[in-house]
Each structure stands twice: as C-alpha cells, then as structure tokens.
Image 1 (tube, rainbow, N blue to C red):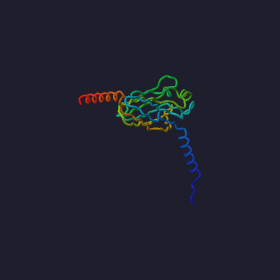
Image 2: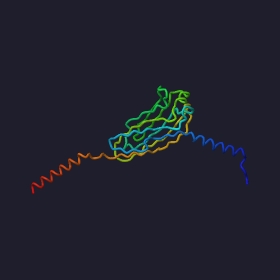
Image 3: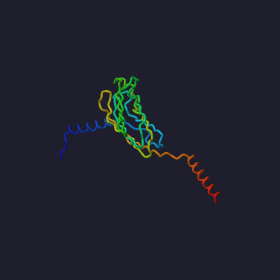
Length: 199
C-alpha cells in the first residue's frame, strides 16, 4: 500500500481549511419579504439586504453589481433607491441603474468613503436596495437576484451567498366591486317586476 507524502497531506489540509474559512465569512444577500400577494393596481415594496458583513472591521463592502429579474407582464419596477451602507458618511457614492430591458434591472454602486471609514462605520447588516413594484397584470412573477460582483474597499472580490434568490409574487385580477353586484341585482329585479306586470 502506497502512502501520500506528508507535505502533500499538509497542503491538502491547508486548502480545505482555506475553503472552509472563505465560505464561513461569506456575506448573505437576500430579498424581503420572501413572498407577496397583491391585486392589480397595487404596489409592493421589496428590500435587497446584505448580512454577515464583519461590522467595524475589514473587509467591508465597497462595491456591488447585481441584476434583478421579474415578469414585465405581471410587474413593473416603478421606483428604486439605494441604501446607505456604502455611504456611511453621507458624502455620496457612484450609483447607476439600467432599466432598458423589460423585466431586467441592473444596479451598481461604488463607495466614495475611505477604507478606514468603511471598515470602522459600516454595519454588519444593511439594505443595498429598496425596490417598489406595481402590479400591472394578473399572474405570478418571480423576482430573481443575480449577484454579478461584490467587492471590498480595495476592489478585491468578497465571497457572498444569495439566499432566497427567487421570491414569488402573486398578482390577483381586479376584483369586481360589490356595488356592481348590487347594480346587476337591481336591474334583474326591475326586469322581473316589469315582466310580471306585463303578464
């Protein structure tokens, strides 16, 4: 039986520990609420949140780029706003969004704050985006998240896990108002009364 050399085993163990440590500190990105049920004409607000960032320490989040997908026949993205987690001093950040493709929105932000400021002041959990959708048609739509990149303040990639990457939204058709049923009942009653007088 042939045994592996000790230096090979140590390297393999180091690689496994590195992978475990790399994933143990991965930031979690999610959408809240997890699901929603609205009617046509109503709006629903969702937030894209990040958690498990090491608060008050390096590495802090310095930039992100993500795509949000949805069914444009059911939902319309009517408003979006960036959170303040990458702008801890309120000095601004480079923010961009691209809504040119129906059903797909891209959001990008890079912090203007210094490495030391973000490392000291960035919270461990914060909102990246707040999205307001309007229901334009009945049916079901999935709001999906695709993280293109997440970087620290030096531009180095940060590990992240997207949880709840598919959030389901059910949009009900326009309900008939109760007054319409009363009006139909009154018309039917008048027709019945008129018919009974004729006979």
